Length: 79
Image 1 (spheres, rainbow, N blue to C red):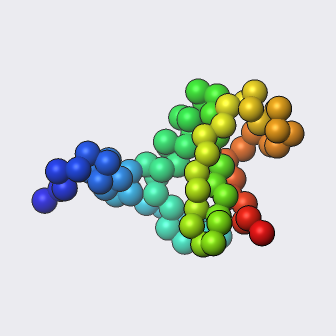
Image 2 (image 1 turned 30 degrees about the horizontal axis):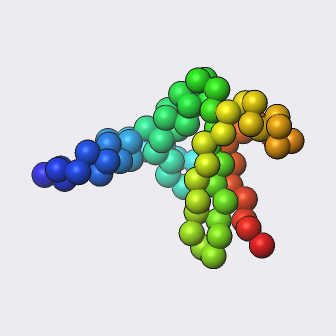
C-alpha cells in the first residue's frame, strides 16, 4: 500500500522504473525524466554535499551565468 504522504507517493513512482548504467548501477527513469524536464524549462539542480548531507539548489540559466558555472545538473563536495 502506498503512503498517504503525497511526496512519498511521488518518490515511489519516480523510483519504480530503472535502467542499468555502466557507471552508476541502476538509475531511476522517473528521476531522469524529471531532471530532463526541469532543464527543458530552464532550470538545473545542483547538490552541494556538506558533512555528508546533500543540499539541493535549483538554479536558472541566468543564475548559472551570473555565478559563472555550467548550466548542468551536478554534485559538488563542500570542503
